[in-house]
Structure formats: structure tokens, C-alpha cells
Image (cartoon, rainbow, N blue to C red; front, side, top):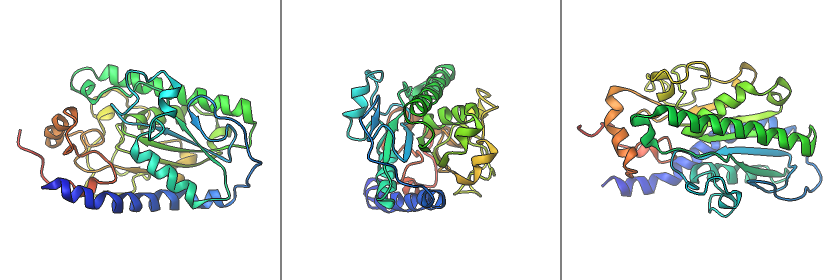
Amino acid sequence: MFDGIFARLKLSRAILLSVSVLAMMAGVLVGTTPTAEAVTVVSTVTGPACPDVMVIAGRGSGEPPQANWTDASAYLNDPYKGVGSVNYDLYQRLVQSSPKLHFSLDAVMYPAASVKELLGAIANFKASAVSGADRIIADIQQTERTCGSGVKYAFLDYSQAVWSAHMALYRLPKTILAKIVGVAFFGDPEFVPNQEIVRDFKLDDVSNGVAVASGADLKNTNVPKSIRSVTGSWCFPHDPVCQSSFGNAPWLALCVANSPLCPTSTPRSTARPRRPPSS
């Protein structure tokens, strides 16, 4: 019964999220001056190696590529360029919103461990996220070496990749933070209620994300103060990754089983039923 509702609302929710993300980034992008046409694709980057804006995007747990996640071509040949459908949709809308600018999409090359790891081996889940953070740092360093200081950065991250982004952002120097034009998080494992970066469901999101609730990582919540005004976090109240609570525990089993009823923080989240399944 719910599948039909999900299908009808998926596009409208995607548009609403896109509008929110684009509005958040628009003010900074207006002042960005286009560069000359740039060169080749490097690593997992789709687009010019030295764009005006490098969009760093990380896929969620279990999203492809998986077995061949260390192969750059697996990202470039993926229909969503290795960043997942949610991030790829927003990236396309971002590009369309600023046709005079050159954008590139940098897929974070990391394991994106299965959500099954949350059931008993969160250390493995964290190790995967740490790997993603290391990769984000390495990719930015490579871009800076190749392009100099002219490239600005945007982050689009979903689920487990949000944890990676949190860790990476706190490791970046102030000179790089000053070039970040926007950060969008969906289904944040490091979610903490009432932070200024929370953009939706403020009255309903009362629990911590799984990384905080489990004690796996208490020091990387939020983002550096200088970029909070351009950061947005969206968490659907029944998403067991960003709302880790006893009441949401039954949903986790559905997510582990890769069920379409898993209430993840995606563009179709508002269509989810309000009550969790009985355990």
C-alpha cells in the first residue's frame, strides 16, 4: 500500500530538498567567478579536474560500488557516479541552478559498510567512516595541489558518509573551510537535536544519531563554527541511523534487510508511516 504513495511523493520531496539545499548555497555561489574550461577527469571525479565548485559526495551504507569499491572506474561507470541516487539528483539540480559555473562531482572512495554492522560491530562501521574521512582529506589536498586556490567546495553526504564528512571537516584548515559554499547532510549518524544545522523535523528529532548514542564518536558532532550557516542536516524522525532510540529499533531490522519500508532520510521520507512495525 505504501509503495504507491512513496512513488508519487518521491519527486516532490526531492524538489523540496533541492530547493532548501540550493537556497542555502545560493548566496555564496553568486559571488563565484567562472574559470576557464578545465581539463581531464581524475580519480573518481566526474567533470573538470579544476572546476569552480568541487562537489564532494559520499554514498550511504551498502550503496554501490561495494565489492569493487577500490576501483575508480566502478564509481565513474555507475549510473549515479558512485554517490547514490539522492546525492546525484541534488548534484544535477545544483549544476542546473548555476549554468555559468563549472561543477565537478567527486565521489568519496570508501567501503560504505553495510548497515548490518550496526547490529554488533559498530567499530567496523566507524572504521569505514574513518576511511571516508581520510579519502575526503586526500581528495581536497590533491585538488589544491593540482588547481591552486581557485576551487570552492560543497559537500553532499548521505547516512554513513555524513560521519566521514564530520570527521574530515574538523580536520580541514581554516583556509579550506573558508572556501566551502555549502554542506548538506541526510541521515546523520552524528545527529544531535537542536543544533543550528538542523533544518527540518526540529520538534520530532529528539534522539541522537547512532554514533553518538552508542558512544562510538562523541567529539565530531556538528561542524566547525565558521561553516554552520551554510550547513543543513535533514533527519527523518523514524530513521534509526540519525534517530537511534528504542522506539526506532524495529525499523533497523527493515533497513538491515534492505526493505523498501526502511525509513531512511531520503527524498521520499515524508511518505513513511508514522508508527514503527511491531517487534
